[in-house]
Image 1: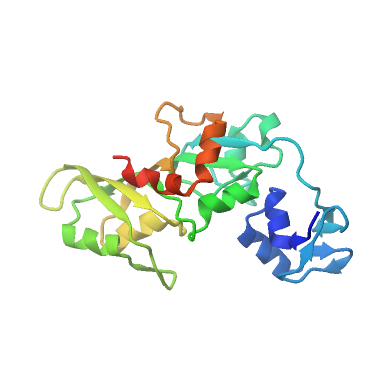
Image 2: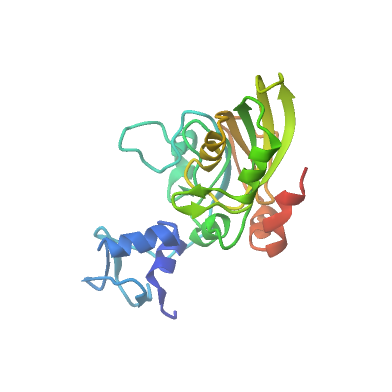
Length: 253
């Protein structure tokens, strides 16, 4: 087996995203043949001992797990929580929890579709901004935002010192008038900054009261009950690996 970069090894083993793996290497948590690993280092699991926090990394074997979960509000999108809050893994049967990790994040008050898998490469395709896998949301905000303010969000605003990518924001329905009432939007993002949609609408003075993710790239399922999960079909998994599918949500209205 040819040697490959450590962050790819850890990603393929389902332990972390490549970005997380790079952080682990910088923090000195990864060792190769007993020595602290360096960023950019390569290894081969057949011939090298790769350990994270003292635990040896095993080469992936057997079929991968791909799950679609309809996350309820009140659950944290993580494998474990230091505050002992309920996590999305608590929604899975025990036999499905081993090795899977949530792909990306939904904040604790956001509901909707979330992928969980032990396939680090697929997770990278879904989350990395350079790939451009879109995520679609239904968003309810307080008040009735003016088009001028919405256009500002569509073009991109500064969050965490970086400008957000252009976003699709379509007005679906409005209750009330003259700035009162509420408005529902369809929002399509091709990146995933922390609490991005909530922070964007807060910037224009219209806080989000409800937020639900309804599609991840080509995948949607309006019949999946809240709190329930199902395996992805082989066809759905394959769609994530083809470039046209990464834009398919933009065509869905």
